[in-house]
Length: 423
Image (cartoon, rainbow, N blue to C red; front, side, top):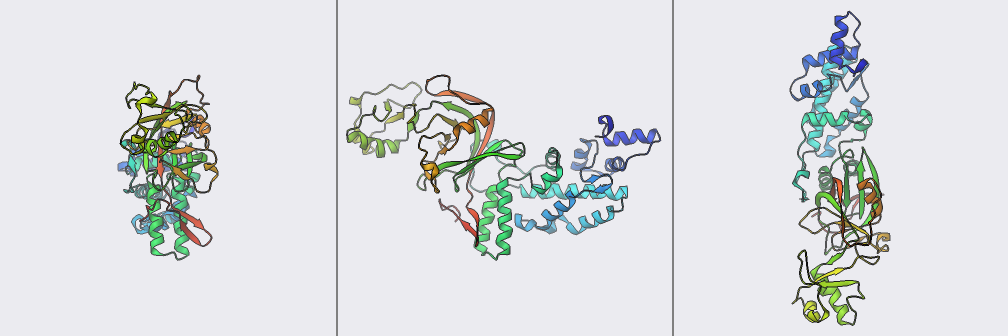
């Protein structure tokens, strides 16, 4: 916007009518109004035809940044030739003299190539992600949405240089691909890095409020406002009970939660303890008649523990809320058919281990209260000792459970494929 908030093209028209000198960027805006077409026309019209690459009659440093990305597009699995880099350089060279028409043509060429590149980068691949919420399944963005997203941050240059439209995990893996290519990594290694890049490709950039869990590393990250806002260790699924690649929207926090014991654990773990002399009360558990909303508590005489241990009787067991509860003080729910959620844990020792693949698939959090405060923008506390206090999130927050195996090491690249998913 120019003085008094007037769109650039409107301000230029007004200055011309009054016989005043028109600033060069406003003259570029007038030219954009004449030259822009299609999706670019819609984008520039929405911002009063103000340029984003031209500053005070010169092409800004952002253009060089974009050229760097386009020239290294092979790292994205793309071809630099798709973006007419030589022609773009010619446009930029012609604009160095400050000719208004040349500046406008360079402006449009930069926006066109940038939008084309981002749309290609963000074209989704099938990487085995389960979309519990179908609205999260990525779609190739429109030209206008790419450009609008790029001009939302205050610092366009930083957005360009940080590749702010992509996840930080994608940016890291892209650098790793470059490093591996320079070190002469094998074709098999490069293919595995490319697979990891595709897993990262479906994630949003840091301007989207969201959570990422990397089940390979046992780490959780959360993002918003264009940056990573926190991270923590997590315990994830063991190789025999893997944490799936899954995306959904967190909708609820449950304070003072029960833990509903999976059927196989009731037979494999709990029944032998009871048969050895332990009581359900000493295990801080209770047995219920069914999985309905109003189950009846079972008396000890109603349970055939030998049948439970043999898998001949299914039994609903739940661990009572309290300091020993496997869910800790809180669990965070997002609807999914896999029975996966995020939760607190009293077992802190596992979080200190280098390898944290021990759970039955769910995610045990190192800092559950910290995550709750971030989700709700205030401390999350139970009102009293009532079990299963459900607190809805004011706004649903996407969570992406993914799997990045490629890591940089001194000799080049290594892979931590605990689940054997890389093929």
